Amino acid sequence: MNIFDKLTLPNGSIIPNRLAKAAMEENMADSNQAPSEALMHLYQAWADGGAGLIITGNVMVDARAMTGPGGVVLENDQYLNQFKQWAKIARSHGAQVWLQINHPGRQMQSNLGQQTWAPSAIRLDLGKMSNRFNVPLEMTQAMIVEVIQRFADTAQLAEQAGFTGVEIHAAHGYLLSQFLSPLTNQREDCWGGSLENRARLLIEIVKAVRAVVSPQFAVGVKLNSADFQRGGFSTDDAQTVVRMLNELGIDLVELSGGSYEAPAMQGQARDGHTLAREAYFLEFAEEIAKVAKMPVMVTGGIRRMEVAEQVINHGVDMVGIATALAIDPNLPRQWQQGDQIAPTLKPIKWKNKTLASLANMATVKFQLRKLGSGKAPNPNVSPIWALLLQQSAMFCRTRQYKKRMAR
Ligand SMILES: Cc1cc2nc3c(=O)[nH]c(=O)nc-3n(C[C@H](O)[C@H](O)[C@H](O)COP(=O)(O)O)c2cc1C
Image 1 (spheres, rainbow, N blue to C red):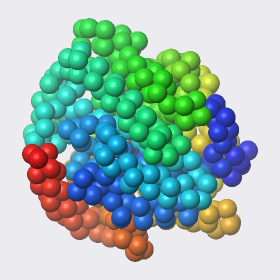
Image 2: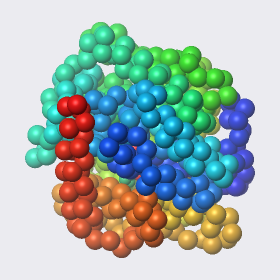
Image 3: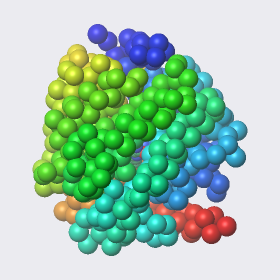
Image 4: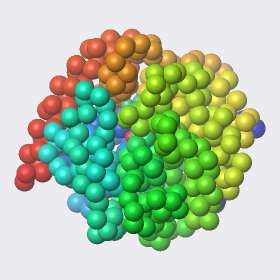
């Protein structure tokens, strides 16, 4: 098996190779929360770079519920032409392009001025930074039904715009992941309690999405292999959820891990313990692949071709790469030409893990903005500088967002 072999998905469509650009939130929407020119530029770079699958940064299903200001929203057809252009550019070299669709639940900063929804009224615990988040409102049945409908509507619009699939984000501590975890879901109705109940929202969303898109449109799910918190969503739970998804026409399950509280997707568990330095979730993915009827992808810490090959040779079908493709969007082509580069950022070893995680994100987003403006990335940028730039950009985008929402 080779990373440049094709993969045929359960829906019959083909991914031209096993390398996927994993989702990275860009915060590069225009003032209407639609894809901007800079975002198109960025995706042209990834299209040219040769990844077989390009998954967009998370796109919100509700403008009132944002993972951050400057995020893209797709909730009606008002700006569909811009989405069409985005899909066309990203597909221009034959990659499949999936829109990642998401709802943040309680992982939304309070300064955006919106009501925060979550399965239970449990605020995010980020130590001194917790007060940046609201105590969420426990969702009513009507709110849950609305969210299901919104995921389906966004998926349908994504197909109309020309994307080849969607990926439903059920990882990293966002709303669907909050429902899955017993730590954040303490409901006593049919949406909480047993794993079957906690997975109900994800399952209902998958069914609702499948019902409105065509059979050849790909539907993927990003799931935590575990959330790395004691008493949280475990690998056994992930295996059980994958068994439930087996029957629902899913084309790919992407495995990651962690949340804002325990950013394992960046190689850090809650206790500061560092996960294996490369392909963090490979062992978990192997376990989960044993029960999965659909192809499995693993993302996290992959930047060397040898490791990517190792992933495929361990029975995992796709290799998800985020950071390394932000530093070098041409990575797949270069590997194919035999150039075994391994784009890497210097590790940020700050004591404050939350701040270190924010600085890491800011350093990666710095590269995305460079690519979006047609410039070369700069992986040696100072993380403090990247964080400061990011904070000031966030400040402006927050004001812009609040003005728009007030209108
Ligand atoms: C700047 C940045 C933004 C991200 N945004 C998203 C996102 O929108 N959706 C998502 O599922 N994962 C997101 N991630 C996580 C990545 O998809 C990936 O799981 C993680 O970075 C680990 O992979 P890597 O080691 O190849 O970077 C983001 C990561 C970074 C660095």
